[in-house]
Amino acid sequence: MQRSAVLPGEQIEISIDVQNPSRFVIKNLDICLIQRYEIDISRRRLELFRLSIPQFNNITDEHIKTVFPVIIPMGISPTYTYRNKVGRTPIAISIHYDIKVDVKMKGLFTDFDLQVPIIIGTNSGSSSDASNKTTRCATVADLNAIDLLELQVREE
Image (cartoon, rainbow, N blue to C red; front, side):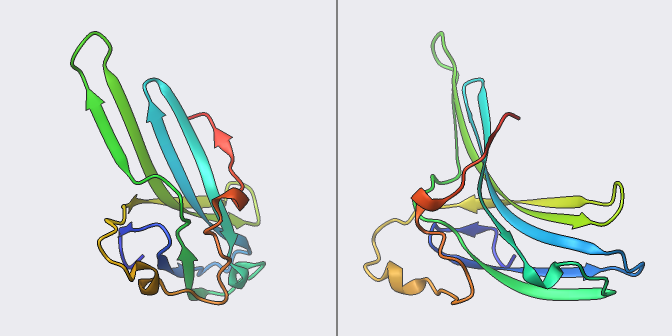
């Protein structure tokens, strides 16, 4: 990724460079945005979106390199950590995000994934042309409609 911090609605480009000298069959490669949050003792993990990269479907190439654009959805909470130990009841709130690259390969025990933390910020609202700064690629699914996102809740 070219940056480790982004705003909702911004487009990021993820560069993928796979070396496959044994020419194993790569069945597919997916990119996910994962939100992890903790409120007091309750922990949850939400998969905000999952995109399959078509260049990695059932291939055995020795070297594969591609750049894939992804738009960070609007309406998600920023990365945040708050801890208060004053009083009888301590309060802890934490929201974090990861970009996960999930690789499925043919064979037993060959699948792997890579999770990279990403910081989601907030827009200060001081710039009136903030919507003009976001560039969109026609090949990217529009992920800005939070109502359309498929959310999967998992216990950690």
